[in-house]
Image 1 (cartoon, helix red, strand yellow):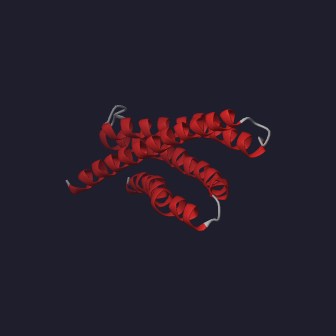
Image 2 (cartoon, helix red, strand yellow):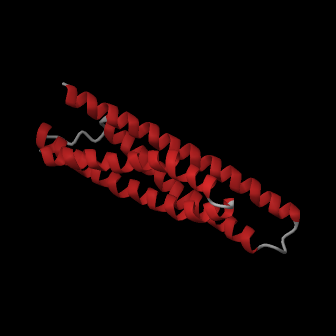
Length: 161
């Protein structure tokens, strides 16, 4: 049973630690150090995609390990335990960001970079749409982080009993 709890904790550490590192260290540093926001965006975009996969895979590992742990320990899976609900929400938000928002942001960036012939109004519209999507991406990542901290708090409370 200790191995299942180890898997669950490692999954949370990878996921939440990655978000914290990305949000508070990597992204701000890239935008400060690199000579242009375009270049920083060229690095941040694939990094964020990898971060999402660092959430989706460990999230599924956490969920599977937790369900199996509950089956072994309590003779039931407890599908609607708060930790499971939080992790499913985290997975959903990560998937929305990875498969819904990020592809649209990449398309806008590609259009802007190759669109020297675009009218100013179109460039402004693209910029507004990119900023709107970026705001949603940030909100989703913040939600994932807060839910993850909630899962960590619940895990800590269990260990304290």
